[in-house]
Image (tube, rainbow, N blue to C red; front, side, top):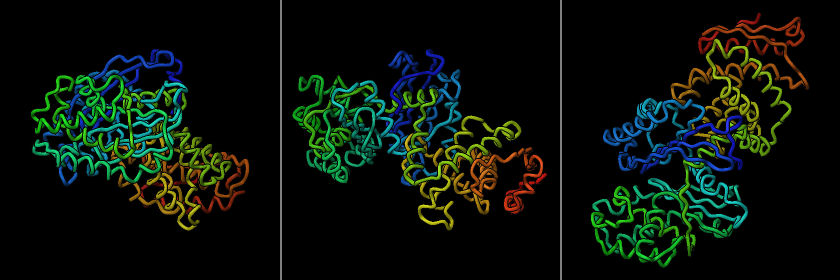
Length: 504
């Protein structure tokens, strides 16, 4: 994550982050202030989204209503902020939802801004960035643990760079429902819940212990809630300790029921899921053999703001991720740059009549140009499909799941038949724009199929809704017969999606 906090040319630029968590929804409005964030406004509401998830992976009507009502209130606060200054993300429960556009679309309308669904690993990266930003060089090896409503993110990094990142399906809401659904808390139940958390973390404990850390930090409501109870009882000062944790565990078991968890230091909305979160935290202590755990008020939403400010200052983590993948798969960078240059030239000519947003469209075409040949590492035959598979399943830092699907879609569609089914999993609001970007990308790819060094096709493109007219200066096309044949074949491919390509 970019380390400097910058708002580009405007140091007073306001930005906002919205975190649609499995337990609570959070909103943070801030502006860059020197090297730190100046928080202008915060809102938090306990929505309990995970508790409203049915076995068929759909939200119950009451959970939808709570979520949409909350987002309408957030939306009123964000009404005057342009979309590029707001980043809203859904986490574990939103990832689990059946791919049904109804709730997602309604949520975006309520908020008034796009909502991205991020992967667990991307969530972990953002959490680490939010917690460790500005910590300096002291104790550079850091373990960060964030226990949310539906998942727990565990990260080990050095300085500002995360090295190991995992998102585990353990959270205060889901653990509460699994082990204490009727509210009864017994020693046997708690032992079972604690052991289940430890089992869930077993796959990572060896790697994490081997990596080691100088400082362990816990973030978000569960950790902060346990720490407050511990401090209220006189069992801790600035850090959670193992001894204090065991005392809180005994205290909760003694209470015997969720209704009796009435510690003054604990927020009322945190009490119904406190036992579940405490069991997860105890499992983390056991698995990673922790003795102490510092706490942080910062978490995912701060990480989102830092990441957004980086994008606005041309320090986009997605660019770095694409560059790293291109290097890993030994991409021909000169050829990728040639394709990118022509694709952007075509975009500039048609972005108005095709209503393509210039900046995100250019970014997608640039990333696709860099990565469209990564499937060659598997085989040349159908390498566009291999590339699509890699991009759909890779952990690409900085990308939302939708952004990643759009990139994978462009790679899939850059050659051969235009497979309209490749667009099926995209939100309906993006289908037309990605189809049009795919057409531009296909043309750029064909114009550079010969891989001739320093080739700059003198191309011009005119479009309307269903027609394209491609022209060339002088006799350029006549002197490139292979390109001419490819474009004739491309016209036939585009007819399958009711697009007519005419070579002028």
